[in-house]
Image 1 (spheres, helix red, strand yellow):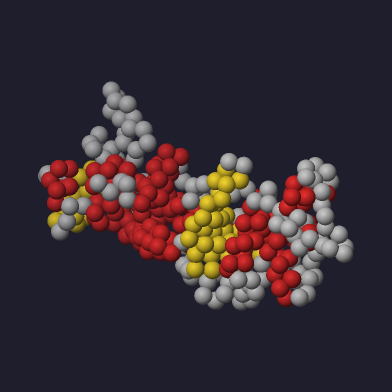
Image 2: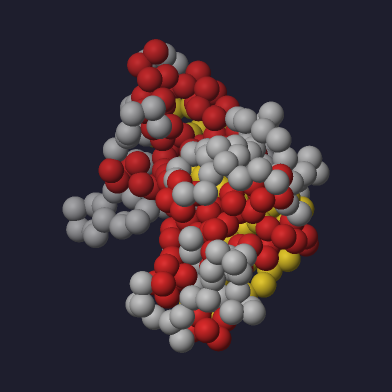
Length: 338
């Protein structure tokens, strides 16, 4: 058994745990040291001794012979609930990770694996191990705290959200002017319906992020439209092939737009590529093009009635402005499938 002196709410107490404590015990200790109160000590450590993962006490998820195992619990989750902080958004990811790894074991280079590496390096110094692991826990906690407070408040205050319905499916289009690099992550955390974020930056760059339930075919259409219109605005169209306009990566003439289907994103520059030129399309123009890409029932307004009857009126003499995009709905019309 490991016995350590720790300070909680200004008092020195004894923490006991098993040899080679797991990450969930290390995290539970961090929670007690950072959030423990005198009331917590009076209830759970009246003798100023607290046990983690041993002793069949309040912070031991292991069952006695006559008890059921405490399912979906580990030392960290039990401590968090006792401290009244289990529902704090900034702790959710760390608590979920601690429980998952306690049940399923470590993965290469995750926090549990790193904990084990530190333990092997300092087998006789559990205090040193905790000191090193605490640095990583604190970094993650501060990141999550910033994410759920600063970024969240900016999103709720500044994001403009509109809804569009497509075949009885609600789709959210969110637009925001912000240089916050975590905004796309917060959008994906916050929006549970199929949704897309159009984020404008002070530099003039615009980046488009969809969540995982946003259909990739919509994003392909958006990529094709925006790439073609970017070239049209420059007065020099180098890529006309409809399939090329939808391809991953860059295309000639619209190199400022990188299509990343695996990441559900269409990027005009990024953190790793800050030197990309800003788009020549306005934020309002981008919003209009995004709406067109999503709505597979929409056609160019002056020709819409004919399109819906299955007749494409575009010709060499009077070309439809939407024709060069090669929209799948338009191709279906021309093939007689509508």
